[in-house]
Amino acid sequence: MDNNRPIGIFDSGIGGTSIWAAIHKLLPNEKTIYLADSKNAPYGQKSKDEIIALSEKNTEVLLNLDCKLIVVACNTATTNAIQELRAKYNVPFIGIEPAIKPAATNSKTQTIGILATQGTLNSELFHKTAEKFHDTKIIEQVGHGLVQLIENGEMNSPEMTHLLHSYLTPMMDANIDYLVLGCSHYPYLIPQIKKILPAHIQIIDSGEAVAKQTQNILKKKLGFSLSKKNEAVFYTNSNSKVLSEILGKQYEVIEKDF
View 1: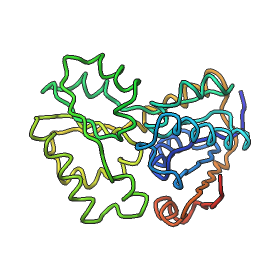
View 2: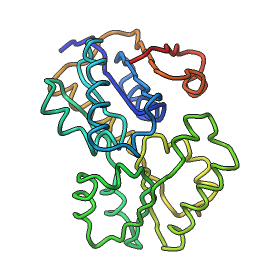
View 3: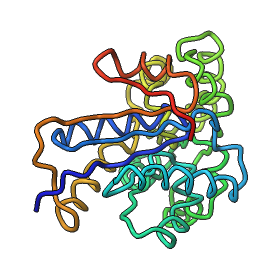
């Protein structure tokens, strides 16, 4: 089944490009449209109603651009709004939530760490998932300030290093052997996190799992693109500089109010 319509992806900023990269790697022929709602980042400190409203706004932009499927490449938006999105719009949605299951299943110390936004850790979906693994001790840590620093292009700043040390040290003291990254921005911090954590602690993010789920839905319901163009369009409603730097010169970033 041939379906050349694009895959739509949105996030509260640039972080979801880590999800886009995983999808693009697995499905190189698919057209993609990415929305970076950087003007409203971070979502993690907003109310549930605000997050739902922003998620609906982003969805409608992508539907108007004829997207066949929408990836909510934001943990906070997934855990707070995806049920409402699925109820309201007649299009498949793929969400992203902290990968607790592989960490808890494989942990030898029965202690895992989760670095996420306040909005994700407070959500009903996160609590329902965490409750399934009551034999595992879960050390939760809100990544206050991390998204703002990434959005401002300050990934390698002394402030970022200081925050990561302060968030990860209690987890190491608690003897975690898995760290789950519960925000799509955080994979960009993996090089720095690896400098802090001992080598035996595994880091898990959700990019590959989301890409595989996208592939499954295209296969079962929608069809793949047979185009060889693999067009990727990126929109941001804020300063495009940081997004352009992350993506590289081969991709155009369009500043647009939405």
